[in-house]
Structures are given as structure tokens and as C-alpha cells.
Image 1 (cartoon, rainbow, N blue to C red):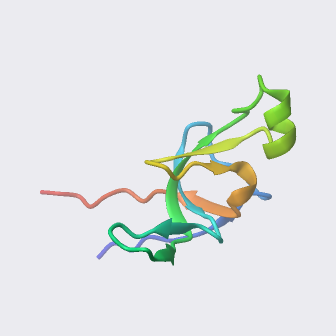
Image 2: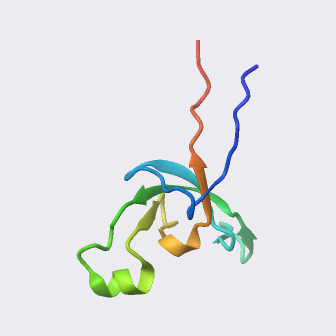
Length: 95
């Protein structure tokens, strides 16, 4: 049996590579549940790190930081929303 280490990396310690897909920890990430009026806390989501995303927009860079997290669907996040990340694990080996 293969085991995978799940080591969370603080964004203050190290950032992902530009364009890298990661599991991101967003402490206050709530989503609306389809077909209901309920919301649910889901702090771990898949995001893509974009280094210096706001380089050409000094106003946005001042307000939100230089970097950005691109989400899948509608889960984009400003840089400060993510506290930790880890590499997306590889899928199973199919035979």
C-alpha cells in the first residue's frame, strides 16, 4: 500500500511554482450547497498559484497583493485568503 505524506506548507515559508495546481487551505471558505439555502465550510480547495498576477495593476496589487490564486469554477481567491498549501497528490496507478 502506498502512503502519501500530507505536509502543509505555510505561504510565509515557501510559495508554489508559478502556475502550479495545489491543495490550498482557506480557513473561511464557505460554499453554497446546490439546491438548498445552506452553506458549508470547505477550507481545502484546489487552486492554481499565479506569481505577480497583479504586476500591471498597481491599484489591485496595493489592495490585494502581487499574487493570486485561480480557482476551478468560481473559487478564485486573493493571495491573503490562503494560509497553507501542498502539492496535489498524484492519482492511483491504473493497470
